[in-house]
Length: 420
Ligand SMILES: Cc1ncc(COP(=O)(O)O)c(C=O)c1O
Image 1 (cartoon, rainbow, N blue to C red):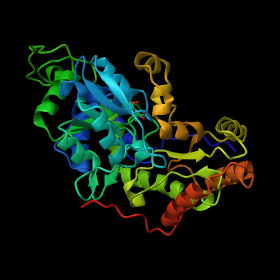
Image 2 (cartoon, rainbow, N blue to C red):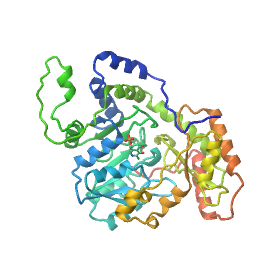
Image 3 (cartoon, rainbow, N blue to C red):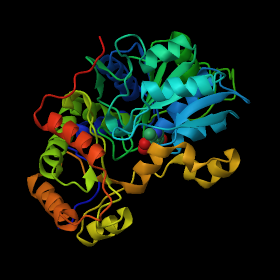
Image 4 (tube, helix red, strand yellow):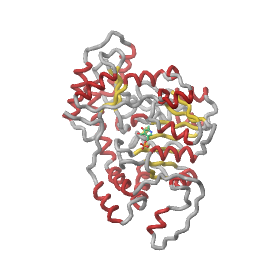
């Protein structure tokens, strides 16, 4: 069998909408991008959306729009893709890396609270909704991530590259923080090939991002070319960027947006299969889903090979690829990356959970095109590689905790969100 790690699902109006763009006489940003912005904002429940050519671009526009500059400090989880940190460096500011929770891979309110005490002068946090599950934005008693940010007067930029469509409670991610950034890269729950979206309820942030998205020009450039009454004149009010989303990509995005819940559900079906089939394997930890399973976009399904397993993470990956199964790793933490390690003299000991995750983590294939036959093959292969072949080292207490979570998930009575 050959099971790729990721496969895009094109089952809707993608070709139709692309054809409309091809016949329109204008291939880059115009009405499709505008419509994609409007429908996306409506879906998420937010006032403004700004379509761009990547989530990295959206994150860059976000830190720029809130005025992050040289000497500023911004909290960033170490378990993330490099884009979450690099945009802070684009502004000449410094990322301050923080640990994440074992099990969810998320920054928990407790971790944030500790970081805010340790670094009281940070200006903002870039919060990653790791794997497609929302961080605990609000909790009873007012000590959720959002509450803590408000209390300490720091801005919150949500890196929701993994998290569409994701809910926290009954609201979509994108409707909580100051600015939220989404990715439509080819392996995401919905894709435009390459693409991203910045959303916000703040009009000033939106206007700034919109101007900076296109060279700092004070008006939409496509209007200059497509309108019959177009005028050549425009002004440049800032040295901006070239981050606009072309209509060809937006056409795919519009079609994918129509399918978003269908695509999310297809991924959820894979996650449920994995929970059902792999929960008895004591040599791995499954990702903890702390809320209703439907709230999760299921962008990735990262399992952790425990240290007592008979195979190391790298050996496991090699065996899986020998069997034709594509897997990946999310992530080698940023504190281990040469540039950041050297620039900030980072010590892995300060990130014990991310270290423990990183040493064992493997992401399994998860996408709506992955059918029962493929899932069965993946699970059988994992079992044959790992089942009942433990090394001695074992932590009974933690294992029982993990089993508790699994049982909760399998009984379909997940731990209730303690918000609202
Ligand atoms: C957490 C995170 N942030 C940001 C990005 C950047 O997204 P893009 O490739 O759309 O720039 C990614 C990419 O996958 C990501 O995983």
